[in-house]
Image (tube, rainbow, N blue to C red; front, side):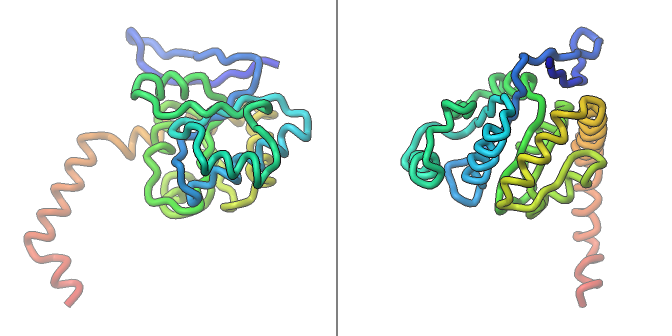
Length: 213
């Protein structure tokens, strides 16, 4: 089965439909820290493989290290690179965009988050997104409206959400389109500048100080 992601990017004034390889492609930008949830990602990949689901999981921001070795070799007893895990290390801006455009679903597995830039980047490119419901992720994604939210540290929920996207092309396209629409509104430069200046003005005029008092 061939998988597709509809990516709305203006290129010569036209919208672009990006064709994906036969293998289902998952993408994550992660960090070399336990709170980023890399171990949950590994366990979810193991579950997908056990169910015979053929996929490739691209991970930007991580290369082979003692931490990754500990997680993949000692904790999960296996080298996940043989099961579709691709550690891409640090990527340039252009390489990161190209990687996301080859993606069927984006996953944020973190246990702790603020407002994840990586999730916003995937959403604004029209990639259907799955995120753990931590920190500010819930302010970016409304479950089943513009993405899917799952419990932190639950590889079964993560694998299940991935399968949900993989087995419903129309739903994947809908989530990607709605996610992009919401991201474009949220990150609209003029609106961000106007709102920020308005807040500074109100602070200067003592509005918030008066409310606190």
